[in-house]
Amino acid sequence: MRFDSCIIKPSKYEGKVYVFSHEKALNDWGTLSNIYQGWVTAADTNLSDAELVKSLQEIAKNPTSAATMYGINTGNCSCCGRELTRKDSIERGIGPICAEKFGL
Image 1 (cartoon, rainbow, N blue to C red):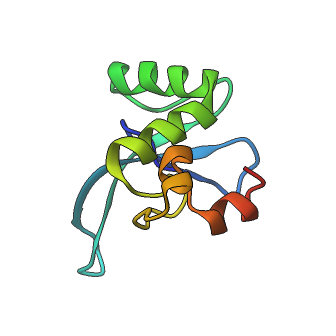
Image 2 (image 1 turned 90 degrees about the vertical axis):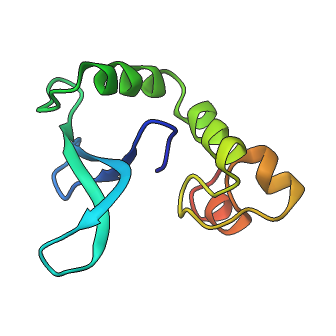
């Protein structure tokens, strides 16, 4: 999911998510990818950026609202990052395919 402050992706390990910045850099394979910031669980994190941790705590209070704000602010789907073109999708912040896929 994409939010104004970061991108989070689920881990293979239950309850853990990886946190990335919106900035991109060359990875080991020579392609651009979002910059890894760290991981978060309900009880622990290895993030060193206190502002990012605070932002994630706010997102956790209402992730749907935070995702909607990302979509409205950027014009991109907060799930897949594609451009939103339909008025209802822009207002929801999530495209129709992702909304159906994730039950939103």
